[in-house]
Image (cartoon, rainbow, N blue to C red; front, side, top):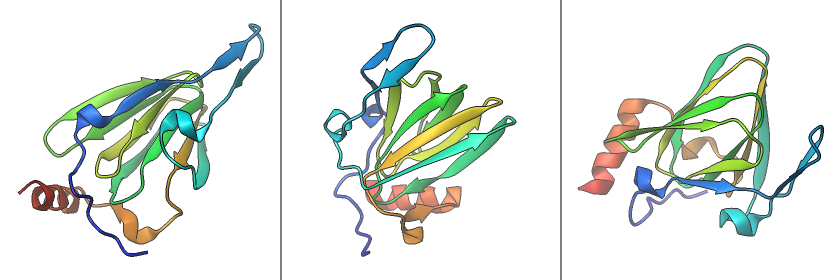
Length: 144
């Protein structure tokens, strides 16, 4: 995959919390998710489950947009655009968070939590910015 910087880099204002249709009878729930609701074509889905509290993520993507949904437990998502930070609590499968490419994100998981991540790109290790200083340099080049 050839990685080309988007014409403009997103800001925290581009994060979107999206409510998902959720039907529950009190003891069971069903959540429907269609790519039209998250405004991206879904190319990859994965989940992360932790038994004990954990800190994960700590990276940004160059091309890959993601939609995060907490299936069980509680997960605080910290997003950073190089200038500002935002904290979003995910604690229901009926609400997800759209995180555009170019935003640094990490997650703080509570005990026994599961995160489902929907991506608009296949996995590509070259798409990751894993060192925060590299992320800041990437953002500075895109903003200048």
